Length: 314
Image 1 (cartoon, rainbow, N blue to C red):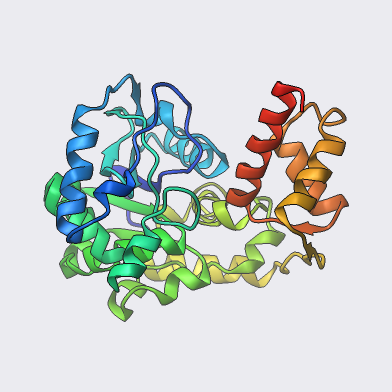
Image 2 (image 1 turned 135 degrees about the vertical axis):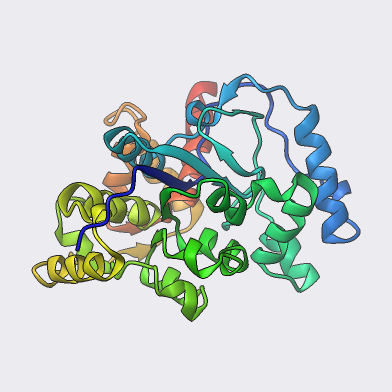
């Protein structure tokens, strides 16, 4: 059974990697006192005062966002970004240069939430209270009543908006398709889980292999480009995904060793000239040749440190 929606909308997550411009605004330590609500309001004031010289589409970089932009262009779909710092923004909206995330790493709200005994969804609720509910997932779906809404989010972002998604009516939820990892499926309610497509690690055996960070977007690309399943009913789309996955095998992941920051930076320094300082090539060297385990955000910070040392001639 085919269901043709006249319009398609894609919601993807923001990325830690952004094109630099003005000084990025962050949550200063002095502001991390008081209730979560007051902290979110302080953050809102900071973003309101910050200059806005680039659109969201021009700001975010990295494969996950590039995949979402590619799919959006291919489908002629509207593109929106779910940001832990701004709420939901349209791709053509001017945004400030900021640094705040819900995932582990620098300028993450996770330590703050942990200290307060709260969850990522509590931060999202406080953010919406400060920025307005027009920045919510529910508002996005409600204000696009004739759209098929394709949501590609990693588990950390899906967990953040799990309660927001739960607010959708049954008829609104029927127009939503969610793409995430197996872990992502576990962080939403059973009701919302019904619209999460059954992608798993077998996707790595498709024509769209990649990293954990871009799994959701690669699943969405396989869904729309290889299967054309955005034209199908939810039941038929699920069947198409499961049938395709049956013919695939998970990629064999080599055993990688863990090393300290100092050890990894030494390896990067030794190979810096060979790979012209390319972050992509150096990460591939670490993982594929040196067989070192290094999460992407951690690698990014170490790569920036080594790059600064190279510039300073140290």
